[in-house]
Length: 289
Figure 1 (cartoon, one colour):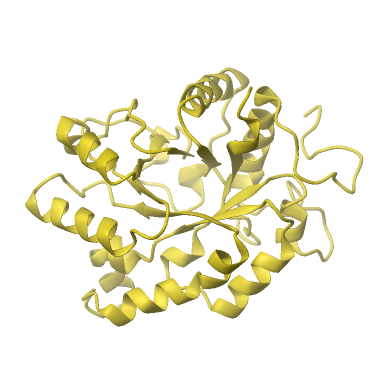
Figure 2 (cartoon, rainbow, N blue to C red; figure 1 turned 90 degrees about the vertical axis):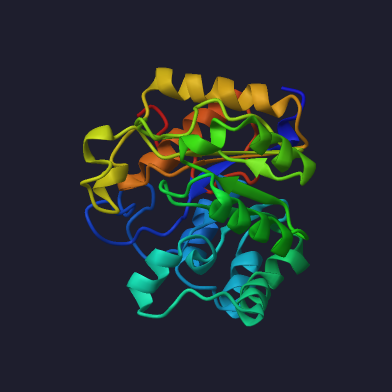
């Protein structure tokens, strides 16, 4: 592929230390290691999901940037206060009233990534019930305008967005990427073939665990390992989008027991992409698995 250097494949988060879905013993070896350093031996990008719950401490972010090699890129999920006000209120007991201070706090939290050249994009993930109505459009435009200095990707999951042809044009006008997602499909789900709307493409693969999608918890919902044929299908989608874009991110979010890095390695192999750094060990995780 001619644009290999612009394709970044990784996982949504890198730290799953406990619970049934832990990565310990599946992706990470036993013993004490720095997980981000280990992760960055195999992947050239990661999506920071902890920022969804609260803006990270800039000191932590500075250390994250120092732990990974040059050329590694982070993407950062926006704080839930911006995109999931109901969830924010339920989890904190406070109203999700956005202030200029909130915006400044979040931007300061990711400044070490910007300064080090390791910030790839921001991800604004909206809930499945977030609809294309006047309120929804107002919120979406506010996000786009507020974070216009960054590369921005938006995950719109309700079909009312893909049913409206004007939405893709609006995103194109603002060079905002419409996240292409893979997850169980329901009547209200956004179309599977959302268009490329900027010079960046952004994919998120959540798994296809339809049975537990609404009833499972934060671990069992993502208990889904893509088959080789399914990874091939996803790889074809990524390859097609890479042709017309300058930058492409693809993240596996099926994080149960290291399924995500396992499928990400498979996609990297199918794309014949080089790894950023020679691994210390002699083989990759899941080789010959």
